[in-house]
Length: 311
Image (cartoon, rainbow, N blue to C red; front, side, top):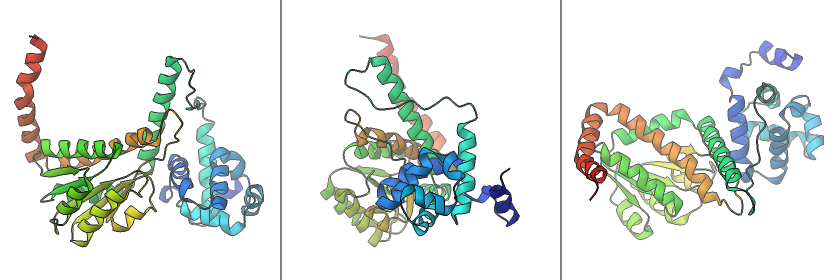
């Protein structure tokens, strides 16, 4: 145990109350795009070399990144740590985790001339990383509150356009199969006119990776102002959509490339959040959800049997 770690424990600090090392890595990837350029340099430095940065004082890291000590401290706090010493402890833990025999990360950049086997491997790795980052950074307190609201909702409206619209449809189909009233809206006019009808006891969910999609923000704002419980599923926890959200569920910000746009990467994290919401609601409403699921399976059983028999 380093002297730095000993000092933190001596003054009452404990890693149990701070983000875990895996959560630190996920937070850096998620929050860096919305940071100031100077804070980005600090975040990128600790993500690229956690072991090296863990050995630096606040002054040393400020000099390394060409920033100020105040910027380093602000970055640490934005990442969820009371101060720089707590961040150093997390960096030491992350470095130890990376040196514990885990295979080195492969690059996920896909070239035009990559063999299909490499494409499969890179996409699979990227999907796994996106899921791991989303899970590590997901606020379970916010998730639990959103589940409770959904489980008791009179009606749920879900807003999303493009790839996020597909995720919105996925969530509403799941809720419908356990007997809950839910609607997905990708048309911005219909979304707003339906949001006007929402009241206390209803739930509105906005799904937008960027958090800046006006066609999604507007109906959420209307629902919020009419008293509905509002939830934002976004990759940017400080984006405009969150100002109208009672609960914010953050997804991982995966790197995009020419052949893999952000819409593809973000959808992976969104689907994980949607599944968490659905399973949580199904658990809370099990007595009614289980018979509803069984009834939906039974209603479709003859179609599956017909498909197996063929024409």
